[in-house]
Image (cartoon, rainbow, N blue to C red; front, side, top):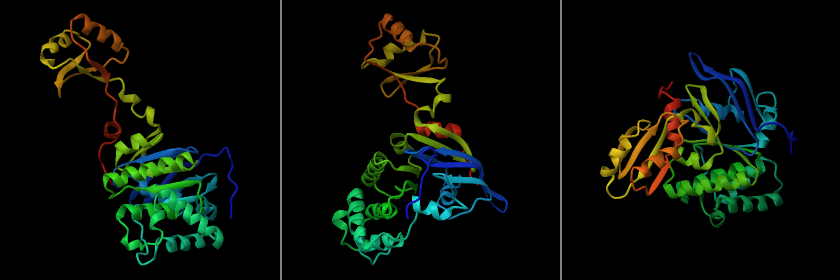
Length: 318
């Protein structure tokens, strides 16, 4: 059954979303918006509330207070509609190890009432998409961990959902399998899917996602574009300068410029901080060149998602 989706509603909207377990508040008045077409990174330490949020959005868990809507449908009062338009992949999911890959997907296709003839083509399509087509006749128990993760992704794609909720999909994968999984997710975004992915591998999320949210102890710390996540840290700009094979001889020229904070030699480069964001780096570069410093490279360091995460959070868990 196909459900009508309003074109102007966000993929996900939560308002004052709260979940408590006796004395523990797992989610504390979470207000979150995920736009259609986003590849959205959901970041937080263990126990921050990521899985609780995803379980509420997937209708497995009811909120204590507040509301959550998925493509306009209320996750509590319109749960059946939500289940038909999402694909939820938990961090740990069971597979029937004695079934073959195509049988496993056929079973779930039947659960979604996909006709027998259509299921054959659908199974071939999703296996091709996740790179498992050559494994369709193999026992699931013979697949590697990475291939089983791909199979789990194929399972949530079987009914062509609009929104994917992926809880640590790269957990336990080796580096190559993680890269391959992230490439699949990028392809799914190009196909128009909205994807929410929780992960601890922040460097991969920085390269993968267009928007992120940071959550700690059930409270939202940041939500917005990946490009803007470090704006409040940008008042302290860090620069690295390559001055040739002898940076020690160039260091005195850096120390003569009062706007430079703590010029230091680090891994053959001179590093310094500009605490005043209004200072034009081009002026600093001109001063160094005028002082005879041989500049081979001069660039501002990019603020990593890890640094932003450490700045927004205190490391507390619940």
